[in-house]
Structure formats: C-alpha cells, structure tokens
Image (cartoon, rainbow, N blue to C red; front, side):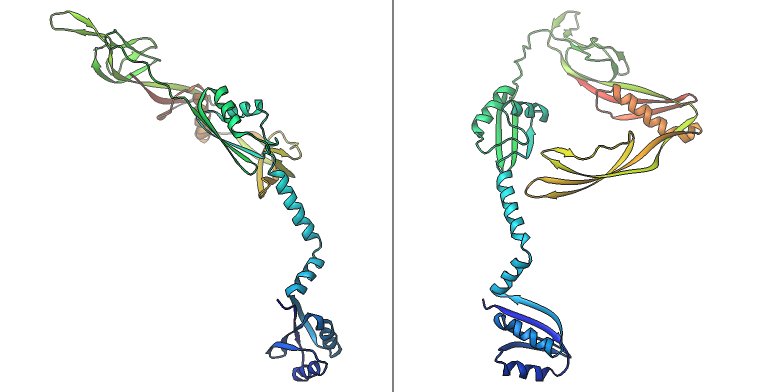
Amino acid sequence: MRSKCIITFSGLNLRHLLDALCRRNITVWGVQRHGMTCTIAVSARQAEQTIALLREKCYNIENIRYTGLSGALRFAKKHSVLPLLMILCVALLAISSQFCLKIVVSGDYAADDVLNVLADAKISVGSNISRLNVDSLENSIAGKLDAMYAVVKRSGSVLYVNVVQKKQIAPPIDMNKRRDIVATRDGTVTSVVCEQGTAAVSVGDRVKKGDVLIKGERTYSDGTCDQVYALGNVELQITASGFARFDGYKRQVSETGRVFECTGVVLWGKEYAAECPFDSYTLQTQSRYLYPLHLEIRRNVYRETCITAVPASLQECLLQLQTAAYQQALSYCDFAVISVRYDNGADGVTATLYGAVHIT
C-alpha cells in the first residue's frame, strides 16, 4: 500500500495553491473541495514540504492523516507504550494459562467435598496445572469420594470437575415377611391408602413417631389373620411454630451518613481490599472483569447503618413481627413449607408452617 498523507485545510484561492504545488513538482491527487475547505492527498515523502507551503500561504490546517506504512510507523512512534502493553498482555496470558484461576464443580457431590479432595491432590486456585495428569486426577477423585466416575476438563486456566455418585440398588423385598408401616415423625393424618394389610389410623388422627399406621396383617371374615407385607401410602401433615413478642416498639434500619469507599481486586477467588470500619452497613458493589485473565476489579461503597426503636402500635409492627416469627419457625423446620398461618395476639404473633410427608 502506498504511503500517503491526507491533508484537510481551509482558506481562499485554492486554485492558485494547487498551481503552486504543481510548480514545486508535488504530486496531488484525490482533491475534494467543499466551499472554502479542501482535502488533498500527497506522497508521505512530500508531506512536510506540502505542510510548510500551506503554513507559508497562511492556510488553516484542520487535519493531517497518514496511511500505509508511514501511518503505521508514526502511530507506533506516537503510542510507544502500546506495543509494550501488548507484549505484557501476551506474556500474562501465557503465564496465567499455566495456573488454575478458577474451579467449576458440578455433579452429585457438594462443591466443598470435591474441592477438599482436589486440595489433597495439591490442586487449588493458584496451582500450576501445566503438567496436570487428567486421568490420574479423575481416578483419585472417584476413589476418595467412592463415586461412579469423575470427569475433569481443562479450558485455559479454568478446571471443570464433574463427579457422579454411584447408583444405589435397593435390596429385594421379601413379600412373605410381615412388615408394618410406621410413622417416621409426629403429625396429623390427612390421607390413608391401604393396598395390603389393615389400616390402623384414620384421617384426622394425631400420631407420634413409631406409631403403626398400617398393620402387616390381613383379617378374614372368619376372624383368622395372616401375616403380610403391608403396602400403602399415609400422608401426614407436619408443623413447625415460631413466636415473636410485641414490646411496643418498631425496629427500623437507618443510615448514619458515614460512607467508606474502596477499590479491591478479586484474584483466584479472594478479594484484596481495605476492610470496612463499620460494624453494620449496606454494601454497593460495581465490578469490571479483565478477560481472559479472570481478574475482577471491584469498587465497594459501604454505608454505615444503625437500628433504632420507635414507639409503634401492634398493627404498625405486624409485618415485622410476622417476619420474625416466620424466621424463628423456619429455624425449626426440616421440611418443604406448603402453607403458613399467622395468629395475631395482644402479646405478639405466632407463625405456623405446614408441610407434608408421605410414608410408604
């Protein structure tokens, strides 16, 4: 590509200027005129001579642009730091690809359990994985977790680990053996389906853990009984309760006006930033990611808060009390919540969580 200098300038007597350029053997092409503005292209070797003539004739030079090899050389000279930054980025990319910057865990096992096994194999965020033996690592993970299999894939500086649990085969059922269906926890019977055996409870009965729900026996019309393997389905309604006392005050969170701002870097899953001086605060975070280095620049804004108590009626505190009662009941709950009932009294609010369990 020919090296050219494209010059845009403005002034009067443009025709006389072009004649002067020709008299000095300066080749001009690509002339574009718009009123008093003119754009011309000259050889890069004659650019300085042309610019000197324009300034000598008192023309206003609006823009100078180089193309081709000359433009590239001038850009590199003007932005001398850019090539160094590019070299540095390439070097960082080459180095970072040799280290593990992120581990993504999936499958049937808890992420912490898999990460602990990887740590035993000296694989963690920040470890050198340039000589990682994937097959050996997969066998180690599957053996220590007693898993069916493990799959480890590496994509640059990221490790993807998927671990699948062994399938448990249920033991065969001896249908000739007596078996009772018993309650596994306290609750109220809401449904009874007896396929084989004799129902020992009815809908609405309150039962405790260990009570027989369906007996493993069949009674005939003549009063004789056979021992059978009880089959059926009993649904129990289970509950958990929590109470929040009303003391005549409403708690509210407000900001004190104190603000603390800092910028941190998240590297290898850990944030490096100044510690917030407040005990209670709200946090606003803005993040920018530098790919492919998996580097996160995080801007944190902490706003100090405090809890104040103001006099209020029960009605004004009702939502707050219901939330507190619900959270307390939830701490006792080990089942999926189907519905919630709130009982409001003069001294506070009781939340009752309802769930169901099917016993077969």
